[in-house]
Length: 97
Image 1 (cartoon, rainbow, N blue to C red):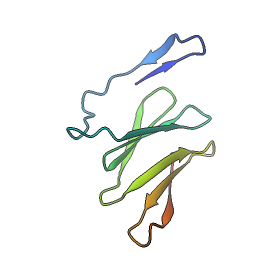
Image 2: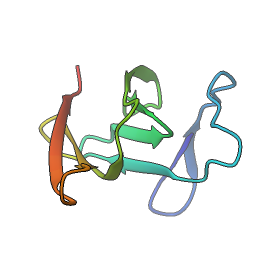
Image 3: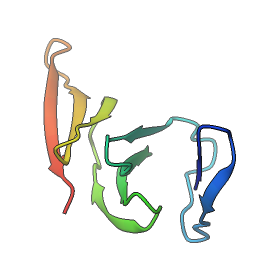
Image 4: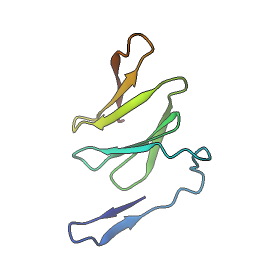
């Protein structure tokens, strides 16, 4: 993970050798909030990072079909889940600590 400033210069870079994605899984999504924190949705996990790229934790999303992710400046993470019942979307909420 890295951060670039407005001129495209790297302000930090961090590697996560223990972070792996299922082979062939290209459905990875990233969302950031106004405080620079971000969430990475990969497979059936939601990973949380602070503004410096430090891993804060993760949430297990096994069995969920998440179609969208968004972070709010208030520390809330919104996940839109596609449910089996008549294609109804449901919002799930996680909080940054």
